[in-house]
Image (cartoon, rainbow, N blue to C red):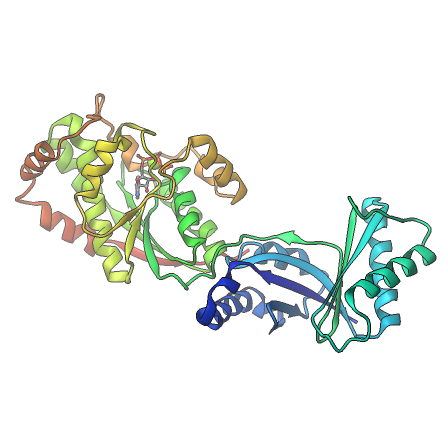
Length: 393
Ligand code: ATP
Ligand code: MG
């Protein structure tokens, strides 16, 4: 008898001939999470099994695995030899343990027989196990419509028995969908936007603009923390910290005040695009949503897009702030995002920002910077600090 984590992976089964590629990527991520504990990870017929995690490490490993993209759900299970008496005793013990910890009192047995050579079919196994448990334990009764305990037995290379199914992050394994560059501010939205594309299997580079001394070291640390929280899902985030003060001051000094935010955003996009290209990223990602603030009107978004030729993905485009906050709380970035450190977008906010910018007008304003713009961009990129952020407990 051995404790094991039984891992189900959702959508990968749709991927036809590419399936082994997705399965390998998922297996690799699971090994990354469990290797240091000496776990043994195996795959068999649409399931992945993690053996060898002791009780002390189990809660931590479970928490980490529920954040691995590509995993649909996880069941802590007991693996035993495919011998009916052993299966029945183990099932009874699991029910007893569950009743003791939760007070639940109704159950139903589910069986899946992947190994068709096993001498009982699923129906018979359910019936026999149900009867065995009822006969040997007074504390429970059967409820087929709404059981509190769903005892499941899967007959495979071993018999796997479990009562809990823990939902996980879903999506596709990290690394199977290429790389994107996320414009990561210290706010609520951009980490959520990064999470949404990463969930589809995208690896993340993150680009953050800071304006020291107008923004503090603590604001920078907060962004490193946010990247770390995203790395909890993806394994690693490559974070680029771009000094932006010189460019912001130049815009502020030379361009019409009401246009400064949109002009600044166009420059951010240009720099992010160059960094993205050098990282092998194929698209930019932002946390913008239509009409959330002045710089996110449809006109502003179009004018921002015009600055770059790379596609710009905005996974939150149709979301209300409430929806975004809900996801931020669920993925554990919210508490960090609301720490009150300033962002470079907020220190230089004009009093009356243009809400319907015209491309021609903005291009003319940019000409006011044309003497120094390329040099400033080169300098910002040359002085960019790049760190590989990983999540460690
Ligand atoms: P967030 O919660 O992501 O900060 P926001 O509602 O504050 O969003 P803005 O400040 O207008 O929105 O920024 C819109 C988007 O621009 C952000 O979601 C992010 O992708 C990008 N962005 C803003 N500031 C920065 C920054 N300092 N560094 C990198 N990207 C930024
Ligand atoms: Mg912001």
